[in-house]
Length: 483
Image (tube, rainbow, N blue to C red):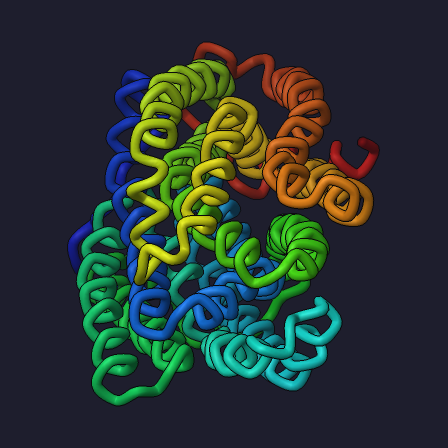
């Protein structure tokens, strides 16, 4: 991204601070949604290939790593995504010099954090699996799969940082195109590595690793050629206390939010692991399908983080509530569709993972899991929308507390109710986490909005002359210290 100061190239940005909030949210969210679908789809298809060609134990091995994956890699994704919020604020305030300096510091921080996490997670991979009571029959497969994913931390961090930077400037289409190409490559490689080279579950992991690396390279090339706003000088790579503090204030809480949620999922997974490989495979299959369906809610959350960041950067606070209302309306419409899919097509979806009819129990358990989860998709939608709006406004620590609520719910269900009620309790673990998080997030959202409106009362109806980022960030970020 190093480039001369001259502004050459083609601007691929979108201003979310004007026009119909509903139309802006939809136009930004649709490409992002398909991108999220593709990101989950190639993981889902890899899982299907594992289940079909390698059997139930291999499927269970891959499935139980999901919570660990979310715990560790989720932190990297959260930090990388959080780094883009000051970029969105700078873009909204049209402070392009600040934007470039932030981008340089993001680059250096990303390299340092990803290097540390790669080394630590690779060393601790097996102890983590043992700590989670991973069944001996699937321990080696789980280790082979997870180790490769951990070695790919730099590619995960790079892709999410670069794609988030593009989205912070309003471009959600380019990451979609890059993901489409890398997803096709991942699916093809997974088939070749497993069925042709016989690499086992490690082959599926290597397919993901390579596709993520290609995604990172693709994002980098596009930014160099098409995003002059993100080009910086070598001097901007030197970490400056002002920018490091600003980035970590948002990035670290967002990363911890993912990890805290992932920790709760890992505790729950540990409890599920003791119910046997059939239950583990069912929860794994149901979780994969649910993740695919819930991409819409993740998309709305990410959209609202960028929307909130740009509009608070521009000082257009009056648009925030309208944008949130638009996102909630969209989520309600999608929820009707999602519930219908789970109830009508739940069994066929579950059977995608099963290679023979002798595993009917897995299909039945998966179907039950999907039905129960789908009835609580409205609370899930609110978790994603409200949490990411609060993040976009700069209240990272407050948003992180909703992750703590999710963790508490999953830990209680996993340690208390799963041993008592078995699989039935596991079905209600995620819904209980979403509901408890909303109990915290709904009042938190209204409190934050009142604080923001008090900070910018004079700009409530203005659409021009935005404040500079220097005058903006601290008033937005500092109030959370007293929250």
